Length: 315
Image (cartoon, rainbow, N blue to C red; front, side, top):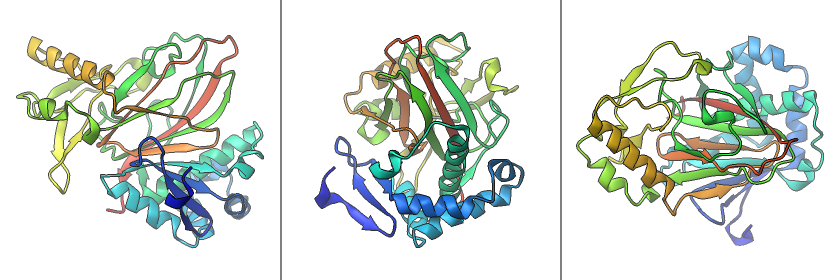
């Protein structure tokens, strides 16, 4: 961490990632987390799930612990295309206090809820049946998508390609892990994708593609939209792509999608992110692609993850 590039705020500090300074590392002080835990102790996860207004209350408690500087900064990051992503984690002294337990996992859900509601509103996640999803990656898997498959790379993609809600952001939190090697998160900002001009200016760039999902997603419809579905306020493209759920209807579409997938997977500007237990990676979903590197096989391999994805409300 570069001290000269660190900016200090009330209860947290921010440093650009050493490999890609677009990504901002937001480190929450131990005292800030203790304040947040104490002031949300009476809420409880069930109440936060049953009463949507409590989700804004826990967000306010986190922001209050930071003298209302955290929410402002997170929104500035997310609305700035040149950054538009942050890794929020506890400082090392707080990290040392994390103990694997159901109570800690509940705390992590509430903390992630506070962060998501500072920047927007999570959509209903049909896969899990709540405004968030929790799922586990183990050494063996027989699911119907790459989400839980540990021994292969999950290719770069955007979330929300197959739903009819707008998905401006995606939040990915590590709840717990055991016997893990590799399995880092992968990130690529589309402005760093060298082949973007070719694919964005292609004749199929703004033609509708059919998108569908396997049964585990609990989505009973298919939708159509282009890969490059809009431009931002500065005329730069926003993107929605995932190779698993695109259903080309003709040869030209299929080859365009295949070439795009190959280009993304061979892009040198993609970089790895190690996410600690209790940390969360949050990205503007339309200008960042994300994925996951493969794991080293281990019979005891286990990683529990949380996902929230939704739309901005503070534009």
